[in-house]
Image 1 (spheres, rainbow, N blue to C red):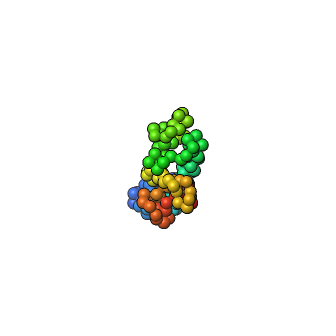
Image 2 (image 1 turned 180 degrees about the vertical axis):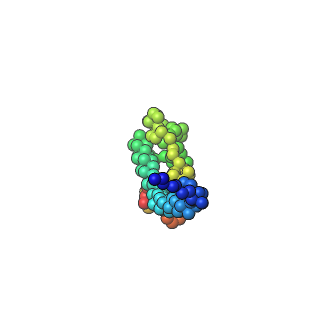
Image 3 (image 1 turned 60 degrees about the horizontal axis):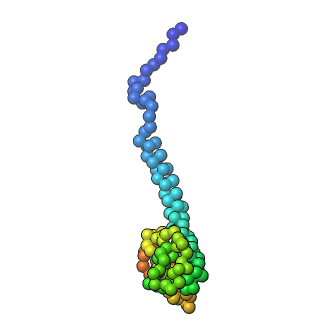
Length: 151
C-alpha cells in the first residue's frame, strides 16, 4: 500500500513567519507597556528632584552653622555660599577658617541653577537658602515652586 502525499496548490501559505497583523499587535502591546511605565516613572523623577534639592539645602544649612561656630557669624550676602568653599578675605576671623572649607564644592540644584543665599532670611531668620524650582524664577506652583530651608 502506497500513501500518496498531496502537495497544496498554494504552497506559499505553508511558509513560516509572522503576519502583518501579528506584528502590529505586538507593537501595540509594547506601546501600551511603554505608556504605563512612563506614567508611573516620570512623576517619581520629579519627586526625586524635589527631594534632592531639600537634601542639598539641609547640607548647606549645616555647613553654614559650622561656619558660624568658627567665624562667629554667617557669611554676608556678598560672600554668599562661596564662603563655604573659599576663605573670605575680609573677615577678621579668617585665621579660624576651617582648612578645606565646610563643603567640597557648591552643587547646582537639580534643575541646573545656583542655590540662592539671602541674609537675613524672611521672618527674622538669620539666612535663607533657596532653589527656584524647575522654572528657575521666584514663585511658582507645583514643580516651579521655590524650595527653601524655611519651608
